[in-house]
Image 1 (tube, rainbow, N blue to C red):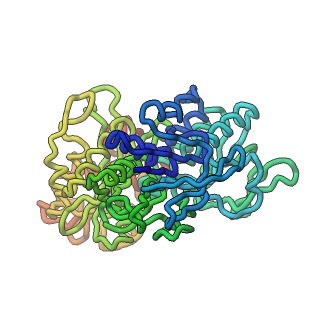
Image 2: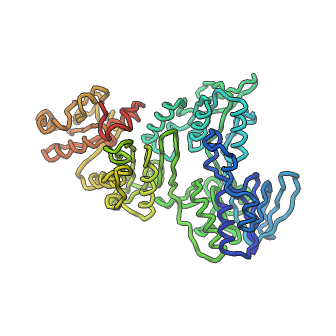
Image 3: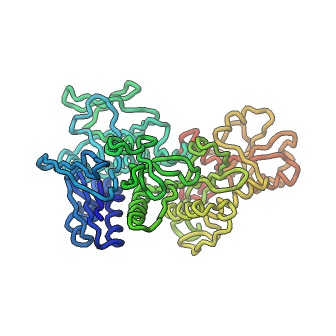
Length: 564
């Protein structure tokens, strides 16, 4: 059996290694159009910033090491230009000399990946305008920065690559302006959870232009000018286009294989395409979003590796299946950790799911043990069933651990009761006796059971003008004096029982505190004394961050209240 693999990196390289482990006799040929067959794609921005100093560490396998260990014929700088499905052969062009030849196959695996999205706009041919997808892109950017010492860079796009490039250019002493078309960075996050990321970026010197877009570049005067949709023009020494990626599937579509959304290759759960002799894996394939069951394109290294393994299994007679992607991801943004899994509000709405949401603000470990820092956790659940749909965490140490636990619960089909019941490891340096994951389950349980009702940051304006509502801020007077919602009265939670007569019973009481912990306690007091009330989900901290674009307190403060 001869297996031809087009594309290396995650999916193709994983498929090749798995094939060899399963079949010592198979002939395996892998074509890679770049000069590198298996590299740490996600580590590329950190080489630009000097965090990874040795460029050799970016390369996980070389053609020689692959050949020696796995007996795979790896041909770098060889580009597949067409597929003849009837004759079962691929036309290949050698990029060093332009020569072409035909390579036959019994089974073909497509792992072409994705390509940077570069809109058709003026001036993109300027060498000072760069993208980052391959090792060659990274080396060129690093060489440019070290040789030219640019003073100002414009990064177009606030996704994962855009933020990582912005951070690493800043580490190299470059002043960075980040331009993002939507109103928040990191599309997997909801806007409210991205607000703290905005504060972090600005605190680290990144100029952030939201709801703005790059429309073109102009170098007619020698200097690089970046034109924006608003009419503003930025002077820059370099620019990076990081507007996302699209599946690189022209080979598949030209060969008549079935394609789907964004032109991605359609496969079955065995990673087999519409041609039974051709498999496809990685960023170029359409997958099932695990939670909603809808079609999606999710470009992440973990799914690509698993898909490569599954394709190899099926080629060798092992009926493995790929059951979908959750989009679990994590990114470092300076000293902050941002992590997501499953659905956000936008994707839940698009899937037609009736969802609820809760926010918690919890410390990474026991607050009496030094170094605890708070994390914001937003959890979506399905109304009626309580099934966990997704989560977003913006915090510091321990955020990655919590998102992985919730991702596991989602994969198991768990509901909020599972989050409550999870028996998680605890010691003061690592967690709290009530882990943030458990706390998310507790808060959902209180909401589902009717023990508490909540309102949200985007409803505050209407509520403040509603004569049927009465706003009570239960923080301390010192906290209240540092900022509050207009029209609210201040009655600290510890004085509430003694001052309950000050609160009218003929109005809906809207309770506010720093993070919604004290307001929940206040709601329980009032409800049991005949009041109708609800509290502000996420508290004044979240409201201030999103609506007023102001960061309140510090992540080192107690979870519900500032150090004053």
